[in-house]
Length: 530
Ligand code: FAD
Ligand code: SF4
Image (cartoon, rainbow, N blue to C red; front, side, top):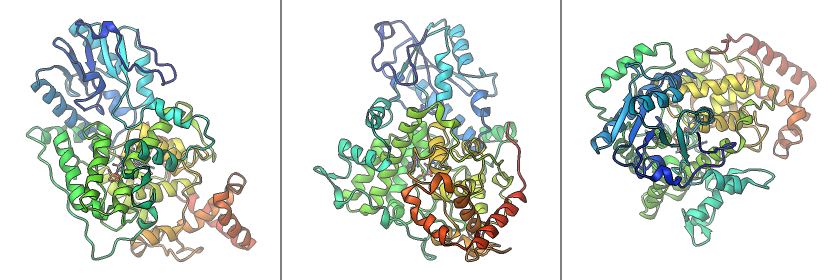
C-alpha cells in the first residue's frame, strides 16, 4: 500500500503511528537525496535499513554525461559509507554487482533480503520516479515531503492560485519578506529589489577568474572513473576534467571558495561569456545543491553575511541570492504545479531534429562551439551559455522541445528534470507559451557580441545581416520573428520588435527567409536518441 499522493500534492508531513512504532523499516535514499537531514532519515532507529542502489534505469532513461554518473556514484558511495560509520545499517547495491534495475526492483529485493515490509521514503525530485513509487503495491510505503527547499510545494501552489500570470520577480519578493533575506524591516536592502541592470558587463581582457580548488576524491575514485569511462563509453562527454565536490565537506569548501574569491565579481559579470573561460565567477554549486550536499537557505544566508561584512557588493549578493531564492524555488514550484502535462506543451509547434554539432561541437559558429565544448569537457556551461547560446539557437532554429529537453538532461552534471524542464521548455524554448517567461529569450548576434568576445574568433561576421559571411543568429532571429508573428505580435513586450519588422522592406524579409531556410536545411541532423 502507498500513502495517498494524488496528483502530486498530498504528502505526509507526520508519519502514521504504525510507522513511528518500533517496527524496523526500510529507508530508501536516492542519488539526489544525500542529506543527513533528509526527512526520511530523521528518526532512524536500530533495526532500520537504509537502501541505496546504482540503478541502471537511472543512468539510461537518458544517456547522462559520464561526469554526472561518476559524480552520482562517487557521492552516493561516500554518503553510504558515512552513514555506516555513524552506526546505521546500509544496504548498498553497486552498479558492477548486479544491482536492481529500477526503484521497484530495489524495494522488492531489499524487502526479500531483509524481511522488512514497511518503508519510509522522501518524495523524489522527478515526476517519473514519483509515478513509479505510487505504483508499488508489495510494500507499505510512506512518502514524506522533501523539505530541503525554502518553499514547500503546497505553499507555491497557494501563491500561484488565482494569479493570472506567475512571475518569478513577485514570488521572489514575497520570499525575501518571508525569509528576511536582504530586508531592512519591510523594505529591500539597498532600496531596490533587483540590481540586474548593474549585472550585464562584458569580461575585461585583463580580469582573470580564479582557478577552482582541486578536491581529494579518495583512493577508489580512479577505479570508479575507469569503470564509468568503460561502461558508459557511448555516453556524451569526458571525465578528464571532473571538478565537482562529492561530499558535504567538499561542497562547503566549494561554496567558501566562491564566497571568498568570486562573489565580489559574480553580479557584474554574471551574463558575460569569454573564449576559454568556462566558470568565470559562477559558484559551481548547482550539483551540490541538487544532490543535497548544500542547503539552499544556508547558502543564501552565507552570501548575505558577506554583504554585511562589507566583503561583497549588493549587486553581487542580491544577484546570487535571486538565483537560488528566486529562480531555483520558482522553477521547482512550476514543475510540480504543471506536471505531467507540462512536458508535452509545444506552443510554437517546433519539430526540427537536433543538429549533430550539439554532440560533436563541430560548427563554424564560435559561440556554439565554445558552449558545447565546455559542456562536453566539464558537464557544465553557465546560465547565459545555456540560455542565450544553445537555448537561443534551438529556439530560433525551431528545434523540437522534446529533443532539446533530452539533450539538456543528458549533458549537464546538475541536470534533474524538475529544474531542467522549466528552464529549457519554458525559459529557453517558450514551448510552454509563457508560463515561465513573459516573452521568448530570442536574440540576434548583437547580444552575443555585446556579452562576449566570441565573435572575434568566428568564421561569420556579426555585423552582417545577410550574405554568405553573415552571422546565422542575425537572419535566424528575424526569420523566427516573422514565422511566429501570429503568436507573438500581440505580446506587449514584443511590440517594438514587430514595429521594426513592419518597417523592413519586403525584399529584405524574403531574403532573410530564404537564407534561413537554406542554412537550416544544410545542417547535418541526428535522429532521436534512444
Ligand atoms: P550560478 O550562476 O553560480 O548560480 C547560483 C545558483 O543559482 C545555481 O547553482 C543554481 O542552483 C541556482 N540557479 C541559477 N539560475 C537558476 C535557474 N534558472 N533555475 C534554477 N536554479 C538556478 N540548473 C540546474 O541546476 N539543473 C539543470 O538541469 C539546469 N538546466 C538548465 C537549462 C537551461 C536551458 C537553462 C537556461 C538553465 C538551466 N539551469 C539548470 C539553471 C542554471 O543555468 C544553472 O543552475 C547554473 O548554470 C548552474 O551553475 P552555477 O552553480 O555555477 O550557478
Ligand atoms: Fe556566434 Fe554569430 Fe558571433 Fe559567430 S558571429 S560567434 S555565430 S554570434
